[in-house]
Length: 386
Ligand SMILES: Cc1ncc(COP(=O)(O)O)c(C=O)c1O
Image 1 (tube, rainbow, N blue to C red):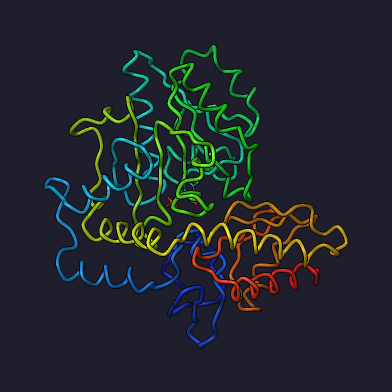
Image 2 (tube, helix red, strand yellow):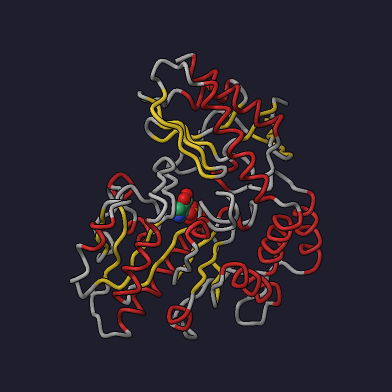
């Protein structure tokens, strides 16, 4: 019997050690981790630079409070803003909390214009988190079921349909559009290449804030540091988490221009957010990404794995409907339910994710050709055995 609440249904495996792309369980079996703690451990498990930074920081100082100046937090804010062309940063502990901050800023933006019911356009099949505001922003009734009353003033529209946004241009309550550049949790849904540019243009024309949730797509996952770099745009609000800490809990909400000055003392906060340990770790993550040319590897390995899978699965008797990918966000959509794959993959010492009829792969950004070959072979064997 477990004393844990029943909100997770973990697989029957306990990992005790991780190195690079591999995890080892308590029986000594090694698994190729093609999920990375759901897009978190991008630089691989126990990367030596990250481990060292954590060790040194732990010996010096773990936590003070945001009531005092925190130099690593200042440095991380500066680095992230310079890298993203944003102006200011707020640090939280998770993706949901980063999004909470963005939603609060959007409401402040509305109230600053005397809009009493500031409304945010969000998208069907999106995912923004599990807190009350972020599950309300999430356009998925499964995530919301049982938690009514929801936080109000979100309107859900279809993703990758620019007219669905334009249809709300006459709604004077709208203050922001919030979206993932690529919808991750719903199975790597990639919009048309100019979609984000069009969304930004509509936001600019209407004085709406553009909120990009890059919790999953950010920090190199798509082959650029941020997915919206493919569109050469700058959002008003940019949220990050997952890969930013490579396993230590950190979230960030970055803001630009008018959105960057809306929080004033006392309007928002977090006890743990941005403490010396997590900020030093995130600074080291960004250094390693730069120093080791991680983005080049993501582009190269993304193409290698995608073409390898396409090649191995080309005679799969129409079992594969589509293979979608951007960098190391990869989905294989099948013509049938593949929920049994999680256990089958585990039995084959491989960690993946399943979303409906799609297999989702988020392998470490450091993966090399030999591990990519193992991944391609294991996944195509699974599909071909269907
Ligand atoms: C796009 C996106 N936003 C927000 C979240 C929520 O992040 P967290 O679980 O850290 O609160 C996730 C998590 O999967 C996500 O993929």
